[in-house]
Length: 340
Image (cartoon, rainbow, N blue to C red; front, side):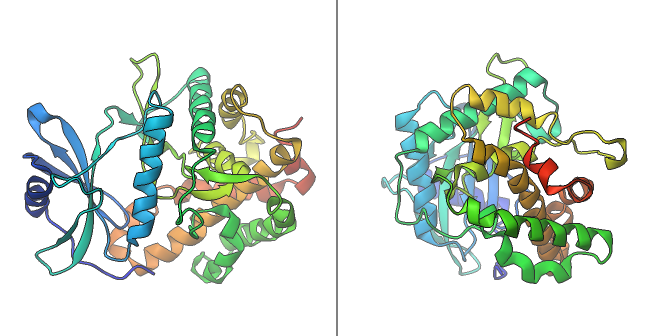
């Protein structure tokens, strides 16, 4: 559990940015789970994202994120990835002592203009574009390594069974039963997952981390937030992207297929990167597992941090119907969802 910290205000954030980076601008807070993150509007200098890490964040893991973004900048400069900026002394991760007396690591990142996909819509060809970028990211990260890339990330579906102690935070009744069943089914395929190909991957291709512009021929103009990047199974990375394209409103009784829209992402992905038949059979189970991860982590964190529960639970409600849908079909049907 993350320890409490004292939030940094906008005025202090502006002073930190000017002192470290020589940027003068107005800071506007973004809603986040842990860090103090601000949009820094510096007028003629442009816009930036100022991230002041939670005191519990390990500097080795922040260095991993910076190194990965620098690797992508060199390996695939055409990919829509933010750039990380050094401070006036050439330091990647300067440390400040805030007015509350806390030592906090600071990063300044270029701002990706556009609209987060969770606030708009996308067509089938646009979803295919998302899949293409995910595949190109995979290839660009394939040879990257870092001492901290094997860190344990709670949102990495690989570790779902480690979260079973959080089941008591799930409301009793159907919601808990669907989550328990998801864990049971995940346990059955876990030995196969352990044999899957692994590399460093983004691991959080959700719609709030995809910035789009409907007027741009590229459509996807930004992939942000490498905070959950980790060395994990390729199938896990794909399953996360597919799960996040499932419909937000869904009635399982009408027998719709949750993977109708996600298959568009997969179609684009497979144009640029291959998946084995075994990975294709596992991905639907991993998407179900990601739904269970979200339910467990968000229900737990919302109880611990009730003042931030609206933000924490913003995507959880839609997932209950998705878990119920998985609960209503057989394991054989799940396995065949992407191979038929």
